Image: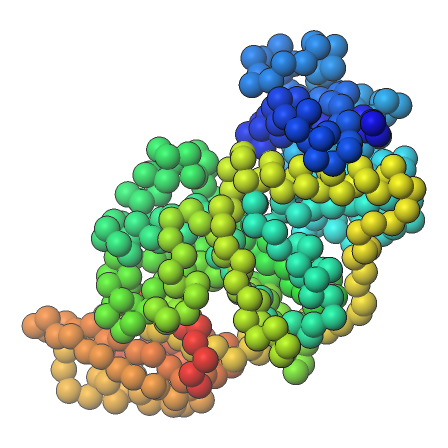
Length: 428
């Protein structure tokens, strides 16, 4: 039996589930893989706290460095989250020649090139399948299986919390606050949901996906980011009437001028494969000239799905460590051009509250035209002295769309720009 000493940083939802499986399913894992994966050290904030697994007390410590520096630990699993001190711990582990497995998307998005390069120098794997999509296998397919494909775009629902909220708003007519409260009650959202609802979590994942898909490193700060806090039931209803559904999308594209990545709410046609992804489910849609379209879907969060992805990485890293040879291809990046989002061509849905009198539509259309934006369709609903104008534009560069809406907001009969949501479709 090939024994590998495992050190684990963090025993929360994912870490606790992983440890329980490594201990409880030890015999089954050994029979299937030929590996004896032995948990040697675990770092937690409260060593005396009751845990969903049984291990000798001396293996549970408060100091994470005691795990990394332990000579009996051959492989380190980082599940503590955040950039610090996780980044320094991972760096120290790979520099000591220890393979590392992590589910920390924030860390990989922020320090990926540095940590990947350090692992390359040390000749050890740094694996992070669970950092994007939880239990959905996506890192290996993009970086290995599709390494020879000229991927054109990656579009995904990569945050289960926001997808659950938007599903409730679309199907039940719930308001944002009501749907968020339900997500928190069910454990889909944290007490502080900022990273989810403002797009930070999805932006980190978009950066990783873009970097792997196109071979050019995209930092999280390079990702344009918007959240869902301003989405209303009214916009959900209008979207449905027009044949769309609203999702928070992470979008990475290779265009003629370079690579771009963004996260924002988007209206997508009901016929699109991502439109049917409901609840807390995640899905990633990949397009390329040879593969045409691929859809990866499944549970994007939670202890069990994420721990499954982590365990798969642990097994691969353990095999490589024992073989003293490279098993998984190393991830490499080359220089490339990143495009400012303001230059990307987009379509917009705009909802305006205006005075209901003759000539208003002409003024609005004129403002769009002056900014170089053509209007595809207009719908108007009057309410006495007030009216709602719904506009969907043709494609134009993002900067022109913004300039058009800014100009419209200054028109005297326009009371407010109530909503702006991008439209993702193949139509011009």
